[in-house]
Length: 594
Image 1: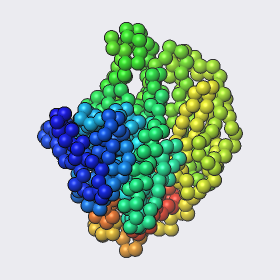
Image 2: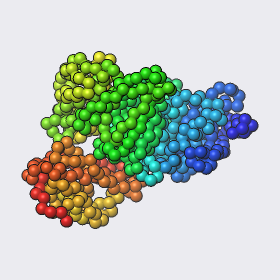
Image 3: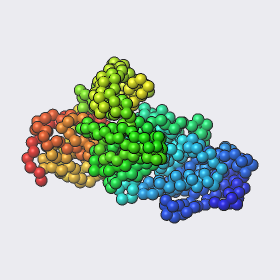
Image 4: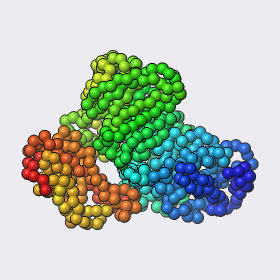
């Protein structure tokens, strides 16, 4: 935009006694990312014309329909009386290049308006699908955004490349928001209430900078002021850049916090980086989050920012987490201070250190097939030394930022580990809240704090009636309330789970069956495959009911007793809810496959 046009905009946005939608100015620029014109609207504050100060920016995203006049007027009234620039854009496309234009738009606005260009003074917000897009953009570009708010945002969407989009559920993406303040709001009568409550049950315990609010139906205009107040407070108290971050991305190629990732993945999934710092990271490529199967055939190249002395040689340790095999390489930092890593889509722990370097790599539940809230949970917590020298004996102290967590023993002793060596440390804890869905555990060793998030499930009664579909068709619910003949699983269709078959567990519910999502750590079961049934026609949430399609390992003996936890989603408007139950059934004899 020319200086003349910018001055014209300043004049146009003079304060008015009665703010009106006409205070927005619409204009466009040629987008290199989208390959065409990109249109957006801008509101400038009342002080803009008479000062030379710079202002924070809120990028306000709407859905398919433009904002109604009443909402436009409310936004205009707020901006007129506050030191804030508001950029309105939409509708937003979740797939392809749609979300990728955001850094370009930021550059356009910062180059045109008098903005504060640090991330702490930049926010994204939106309503409905725009709220969902705001969360997506803040999670994809946390290095550009200091705060995000979702106003009645939809729950899920298909995101990623047009050729292979993947199902993106905000519940699973909490790790992407290191350094970002977050606010999620909903109406008390909203059909999305269930999805927002579910998100709260996870994010409240994994994100210290997260808040949520419920407002009375019909009070959405008043909530706009509270939403923008949240961002003004965030501008005054921005969070620092994280020293350690995690990130998952549906696009094979991305840049986050200066780390550049390029992959040849050509199927739906997520490239996952965890605990990234100058001393290393954990990485995998997964079909879905949090526990989807890895995609080992994917090749991933990861480039660090310019954080190392140019030209020096560093010892890099690669630990293949599936089998514990270790590779050690001496790698030279390039002339720009960057280090590059070539790796597969399997789960890897990567350490960059000539000295000892302790890392927490995961956990397994012992003495039960899942972790139950309100009952003692026994874990084996896995540690490894991903450094180049032996560790000493470490005193591990356990803690949690969450309330209601009681540890049976507050500390444990981890004996010396050679480079590349791993060991398990037992841990027992109880969470008092029987409805808790997640708990964050912190392992403290000296100055090092290592976090692990443990999924919890409520106590469940045994299922009184259920069916197994191993390659047969049944009358099942589809799209929440419709009934249809659906084939589940692959096998001989005899209604039993045999080695080598995939199957679904089905629960009767009012004249049809619902396919269950299953949870277990049973070594006989591969539970990394799943399906989904869209509920968008029912509640316009963008969400789907997930169901599992496990398989029994071929070497599992007939008669072996399987133990699983199942849950189904029961549609009931704003009172939609999960129903949980426990399952016990034997591995069956394989009698041939149809």
